[in-house]
Amino acid sequence: MIISEKIVKCLENIKKVVKKLILLVKISKNTPKSLIENKTIEDYSSTSSLKSISDDFLFIPSSLQGFTNTNTKCERINETRNLYKFNGILTINDSDYICNKCGHKMHINNSHPITLKHLCFGGNLTCVCFNHTQFYCENCHSTNMQNISFKADNHRITNELYNYVRDLLATGHYTNKEVAEITGLNRNVVKDIDRERLEEKYVVNGELIKPEKQATYLGIDEFKLHNGYKYATHIIDLETGHILWIQESKKKQVVYDFINHVGSEWMNKVKAVACDMNSDFEEAFREKCPNITIVFDYFHIVKNYNEKVISAIRKDEQARLKKEGKTEEANSLKRSKYILTASLSTLIKKDKEAEDGKVIDKGSNLFKKTPVKRTGGKVDKYNKILEENELLFLAELIKEKLHNAYTLNNER
Ligand SMILES: [Zn+2]
Image 1 (cartoon, rainbow, N blue to C red):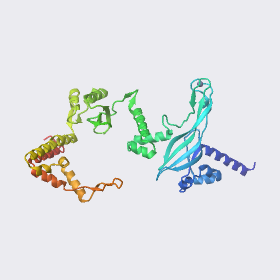
Image 2: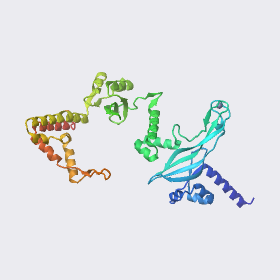
Image 3: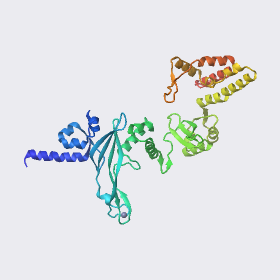
Image 4: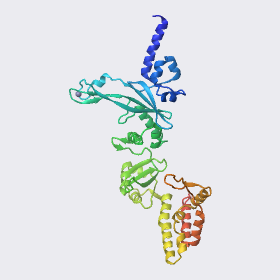
C-alpha cells in the first residue's frame, strides 16, 4: 500500500472512531437554520470529509458512555429556544445479559424508546433519545432493564444535567423556579433534586445535623401553609439568614423540639430571640432559657398597634359620630383604614405616583376592564382626619414615638 493510501485509510479510521466517541455540535452561525431544515448531522458527516467537518463543527467530548449519536434533529419549542434531539444507539454490554437475581444469562425481551433530558447549550435545550432494552431471565422469570450509566437515579435526565442543577442550586443565587427556567426542567423535578441535595448535606443516618454555626440572635415566626388552616414555624439565625428549623405547628412544642435538637450548651450562647408579641414562643423561651432576652420585632409591634389600636379607635369613633348624628364626619372615616395604618412616608410616595399618572391595573380588553390609575390626595385626607379627630391624632403621635424608639441605639 502506498503511503498516501495509508494516510487516507488512517483518516477514515480516525473519522469512524471520532464519530463514535463524540457528539457533534455545530455552532457556526448557520446552525439553527440548517438544522431546522431537518438536515441531520449524519448528513453533514457523510457528505463531507473529516477536515471540513472539523472546520464546521466544534467537537465536544461526551460522557454519555456507550451512547452513539447517529443523527441530530432540531425542534423549535418556543420563540427563543430550540431543542436538539440527539438520536442514537446505546450499546449492550455483556454484563447487561447477566440476571441480577440469579446470575443466569438472559435474552432480550423487548425495547422501548427513552428520552433523557441533557445539558443546555446557551438558551437551547438538548436531550438524548435511544432504545432501552429489556431482558428476560428464563431461570427465575424476572425481567431486567439495560443499565444506563449516564442516567441520574429516579429522574429521566442525564447525570450531567443532574449535577448542573445541583451546582446551580448550591450557588444560592437562583430560586428553584429560575433553575427550572434555565435548565428547561419542570419545577417539581428541580424541587426533588434540591431536596435530595439538602438531605445529603444536612441529614446523617436519618437525623438532621446540628447547626454548623453558633447563632447569637435568633428569629422565630409562624406562617400559613398552602391550605390556610395549618401553620408552620421557622427559626432562623438573624445574622446569616439561614433557616435552622421548620416545623408544622405554631405551638410551644416547636421551641421545645428546637432546643432539644441544638442542646442546652448551644442555647446558652444565644443572646436574644426576636418574636411576635402574641405568640406562645415567648413563654416557651422564658421557661426553658431564662438567660435569653426576648425582643419584639418592629414589624410585629407596628402591625399589632395598627390592628388593635388604630383600627379599633377608627371603628369606635365612626360609631360614636353616627350615634351623635354627625353623618358627614362619620362618613369621612369610611374607607380610611389604609390611610391610617400606612406610614406618612408611604402616603407621600403614593401621592407622588398619582401625580406621575402611575397605572396600577393595566385593564383588559378581554374582560372589558379599563386601566386604573393611582388616585391622589391621600396626604390631604390623612391631615383632614387628624384635624377632625383628636383621639386618632393622639394615636398617630404614639405611633411616631414607637417608630422612633426603634431607631435609637443607646439605652438613655
Ligand atoms: Zn434470573
